[in-house]
Length: 295
Image (tube, rainbow, N blue to C red; front, side):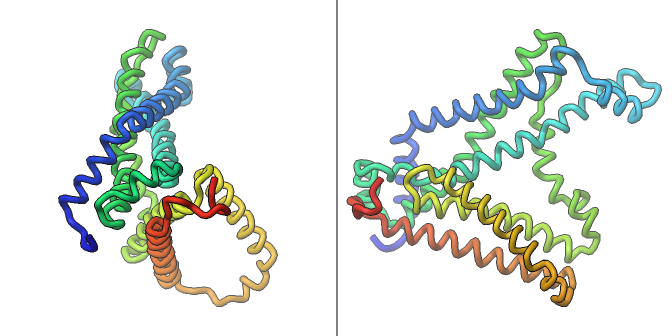
């Protein structure tokens, strides 16, 4: 079995789903609790005390002389302002899922059961990668919608009820990269805008690739150790830039489009390298690990 086979890949996917269904339900329940906590933190005060003066003034400015329309505009402002919290939580979920993509290999029994499956390493790797990406996104939306419905059903008991946050989260996810979004405002040139979109997309993908790679290399606390490593790397970068600021000023300024193109190329190469190294590390995992690599 050296070639990728779609039917066999589907069987591995099915096995991943059925063998870990209890664990997957716990994940969804944990995501539901997290989303509900965000809902509670964002909407408890407005549901108990009503809209703040800030949102009421915004609504009045948006619809002067129309009380009902002003109130609706104020409520939309409240929902829109709370949408980024769920987007940030989704990012956390995706990086956490990437670091835990191969958690089924942490024990000797898990490695024996999974690595001896009659399937290629590519099929096994892609199956775990799919569950850590598409599966994590599906689980998040199930938990988020359930938490949003729970809040809309229960919070009116406190005195005030508000609509769904789901459309505003969709808008928040798409608006930043849209032609009329933030990037287009700061990058009116079409080529520069496309390179800026590529830069942000590659930067987010690089974070996922780094967490996935560290998830294959580390068996204990991969998310925590990867996060601490990235924080240390960021702090070191800031220190180096501060130390060599004068030398950096002597470097000739590049055209923004050229600079963005170079950065995009470097990020793309780093993403490919991280995914390739994670695949290579997965293929080299042994059922019985060396003593110095054991937990």
